[in-house]
Length: 131
Length: 262
Image (cartoon, rainbow over all chains, first blue to last red; front, side, top):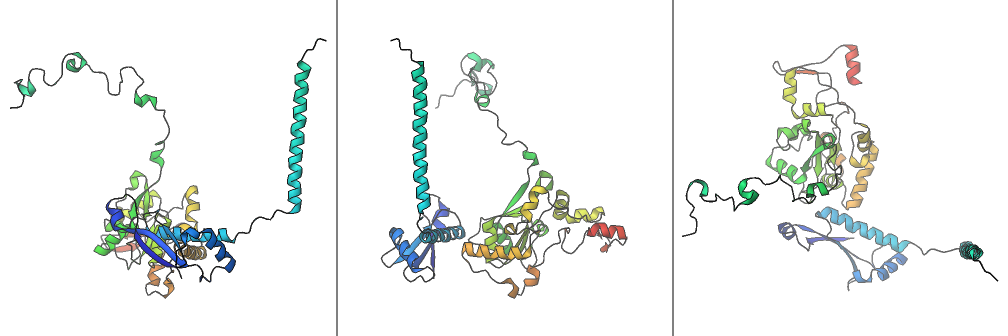
């Protein structure tokens, strides 16, 4: 279900770059990929809009390593991370935790003002005012 | 004609020494002196980069490209389990046990070209190398040889001529026990079931179909592994090999047998 193709990578490297196929490219048709749930598919389509071509195929390529196999492994790893990112649900902050956050912020402000008043008292007590 | 006069032996006149000063009079300061400024070799602080280098373990690298080359030329037999002895006899690698070499490690140099089904035993192997060999249907094992057994392994004939009984292979030191009990490195002390799991994991990671070696005709040969205390494939520790009479002597004393089977 995944189409894998190899070609020559870009960049400097002399004869090795010119002759050895080290860039691995993996494509698969996103809409018909039945191994990904529907909602996740749509999320991926919106997140990686730039990597989908007109025919609807998601393209992942890698040319980081000198070896085809390692580039293929990197491509598969990238696809896995994409799917996991699309599957994660947005964090739901419960009411108790929001309450706790507000309380914490208020407490911090109160403490800060208290410390400021103490400091101000110290500075005033050093002043000598002759009336 | 070019201006080369001066006459005499070695040039003549100033003899290539320049004009007056320390240069001509042969009194230049020592190498590295920079006229009083703190020289470069003293400005840089000392740091233990090479400290203890003579106590570090070295493993001779063996690339998959070189292994493929040896198999193609027929120097190494892929139908038999490949061992350090086989590699040394084929002059594929030259190991120097006296120079802190602890064996051979597999390197991924020819990963894309490699296509040979072999049963290999090395001392260290990287992940890609293990993956490539298993993709082509082979078996990799990593095992430990202490320096004495390594020397015996590399030069068996010289050892047999000495007339000493084959010693048992020692177990790895503490820091290496962890490495050799790990299934991911295919250590010889690891659990076989965990090794099978690790094979599946690698297949998933690198995206290839793991060929089933149980259905292979050479399965028996591929699955031969050495005992942790054994140095050679056919011989057990405690035996003496007599090269002149082509005989093998085995110990019969109870205590010796108990010691050698430990």
